[in-house]
Image 1 (cartoon, one colour):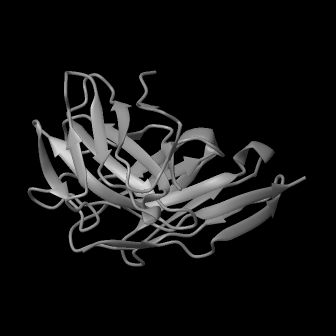
Image 2 (cartoon, chains in turn blue, purple):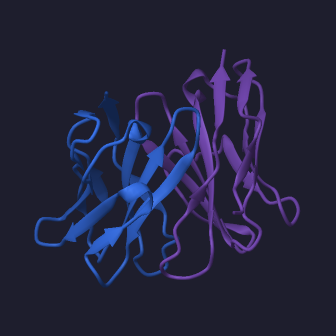
Length: 116
Length: 114
C-alpha cells in the first residue's frame, strides 16, 4: 500500500520569499511522484513529476522538487514566491506495480498563502 | 492544449435520487479515472477504467456506483440512491498509454446532496 504525508496543512510566506512544501511518501515499489496545484474553483493541474532519472525535477511556474530516496521525500520548492502562487498543493504517488492502473494516492494538501 | 471537461460544474440533488456526472476525457487517452474530495479531506481514488471495463475500484466504490463509457468520447459516473455523505467534489482524470504518463484532471463537479 502507498501513502503520502504532507507536513503542514497551511504554509504562509511573504512575496519574494522561499517556498518549501514538504511531502513524504511510502511505497513498496519505486515510486512515481507528482505535485499538483489546485487554484480556487478549478481542477488539479500538474506542476511536475518524477519517474526515473534525474532526481531534481523542474516544473511549471518556477517550481522544482527533489526526489530523495533515502529520506522518502519529494519536497516542492520555489526560490521566490509570487502572489499568483497562492493555491492548494497536493503531492501524489502513483501505484506502478505490475498490473496496476497507475492510480494516484494523494496527500491531504497544503494551502499556500502569499502575503504582500 | 486538450483538456478533460466535466459537466455539470455543480449538481444539487435530493437524497435518494440518482445522479450522473459526465466527463469528456482527452481524445487519445486510454485510461480513465474518477476521484472524489469530500470537503476538508484528501482526494480519494474511486475507480479506474481501461479497455471498456473497470480495471480497479476502491472500497468506496460500492454497488451504489457505476461507470460507463457510452460512446467514444464520454465517461460517466452514476450514483444510485444518493446519500448525504456522497456530497463532495468529483474529479475525472485521464491518461495516455505508457509508463510515465501523468493523469490530467478536469475541473470537477461539486455534488451537493440535500
